Image (cartoon, rainbow, N blue to C red; front, top):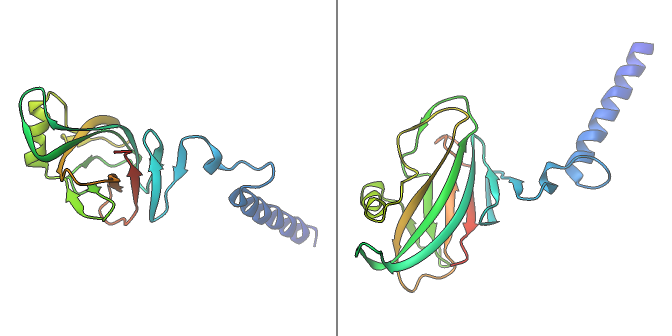
Length: 179
């Protein structure tokens, strides 16, 4: 009887603790309240530059974003280039290779500008920036690099959508680039 009472009390404390942690109230530890950190569910909008975004198997951070019509090396955009510096941590224990479908550009009309690794890698090379889509990323490793998009000059409210590195996951997040 005593063991049952202890078990019931322990379960009540644990269930209260889990609800307490998830509610974000009181003195419990709520990871969501840590500045610069939000755990992303299946899909979430409204992230900002320099905010860490934890998806199922990776953590993305958009470090900076800029746009220009031409580069210092004379490469001209059809519309305007948008360069985004990213940091990616592989939270899994498996090595991965980014394919390019993990990163997309959206404007306020949700016009999708997908990242073409061949075309945009050559733009990045021309301006002396290293692509984030380079080789193998080992489990637990963090890498930095750039993505480039050629978007319409009329595009406004540009957002970067990042996806989880596990292609079977539907987790994604949208980052407001302030451009």
